[in-house]
Length: 271
Image 1 (cartoon, rainbow, N blue to C red):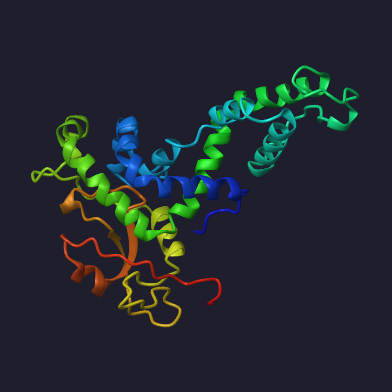
Image 2 (image 1 turned 180 degrees about the horizontal axis):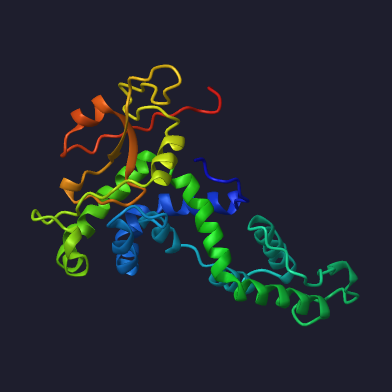
């Protein structure tokens, strides 16, 4: 079943996704260590909260961002940022609007006047609801990162060092989910995960040399296989962002030591 339509903070999500992807090689390992327990909990079996989500949270802090703006920008610019952010996440509090033109003091910087106090009210609302706002922006950013199989490949390849280095801790915490070879045990693929990967990969085998149709609209012989981008045998995980769509032939021929994927996809239009 396809996911329900919902409001997404696309502009904020794009900004966060771009920052996270471009800084991954500098801060990825640090983020893994900061959210060690959270990441371990979500990589053992497919979960809608993924390791990529936690990595995005490493960068997303609306309260800290607003605090920095108060130290560098005038209230009018801060108010504009707050309005755009709240519109993005579809939150519309019943607070008074700041009318900067109504301020009669031509030299007023709006820090201590009535208008400035209104901006502080909006700032307080952001701080009070920061958890929900951060969650909505991270959720939106994930929609972009999840489409980039090459980044997911690099992300999970880097995560293998984390998994291998924490295997004793993982085994202690989840003894039934670790194999005798000291690898994370394969888990059941839930329907929501199969649907998400199918829609992302547009019902097509991700192998650039194959690209066969798996929608069953044209040919019914091809079977859908969910493939670990980074195999469990290489200290990969069951994290929901570590999967791609392959046909049966490509999946069985890939092998447990291959991390092959591709950036080939279907554009909205061609150049």
